[in-house]
Image: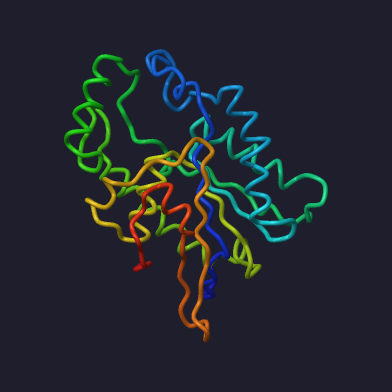
Length: 243
């Protein structure tokens, strides 16, 4: 059900998944499909004891929250750990709106089972060529991921009109995804240039970027800003929202 009322969320919170087996041992990708790679024990503990609590502290105990997550195992595990924090004691019963698995939020595709020697060579080439336009053999370029992020943003704007999601003016969106995908989402939203994007950095595992809603005094214009600390951590350019 779509209404004519466009209500942008109070916050859009982007989260990179916690530490996975692939983050500590790249040979993991030679024997486990990328989309099935799970979190490490450390990743689970950090997600439960640190990241989930940080997200909960940002949102509080009453504002509704809706989740989008890449369907990869490591992102879904991270998402569930955060959602669990909103089901605990002190949370209002209607605070957790729901979860949508979103395939457009997945990691850059590197092919199927990876060959360590081929991937090592490819990553060295990508460093020289630039991560936005470089295409992995049998995989995607950064541009492909950017295009996925762009169509996902179109879906977000449709959901800004969905009364099942936007019924509270202070609702929040949490997007659990991957490092490069997160940066390309920000590039599309804030209209960074390619050269500016190439200077940005991935957030750490479990890293959080908060887009805070701003408005003009007459509420006729609404936009989002990222705090200076997060922009410095990811080396994001100064920005103005243009979409």
